[in-house]
Image (cartoon, rainbow, N blue to C red; front, top):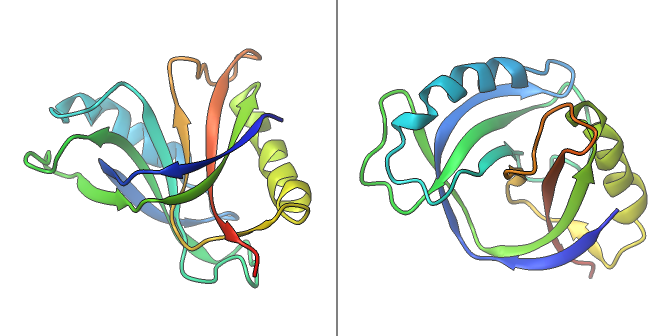
Length: 160
């Protein structure tokens, strides 16, 4: 799996979020609500879609699949001057990220995440940091197409 380390500049996003857990996955419901309304966002930077998870501090220290987090469907914007009704803002702070390219159907992304958290991360010089995790779906994202690609961004910090 292709991996790179990047310093992310702060990003401003507008979108919708829902509280869920890994056991009570509401991703489909969130995106079904967001996609018909995304064109109301007037100041988007590009056509990329962002799927984000905002976890509580220390969420991964004692992992529990029933523990809740915020799941976001969003688009990057230049500013927060116009926020469509029913949508909210989120800022991804700058920081260090490990970036992975998931190639293949979206349904197989779980395998990529498993690799990241059980193989790559424990053997790397990094720990997970307490900032949003996200996937960027560019024009190369084609849902269940075997040629689909998406970028997975995991916030990291150097091990002490």
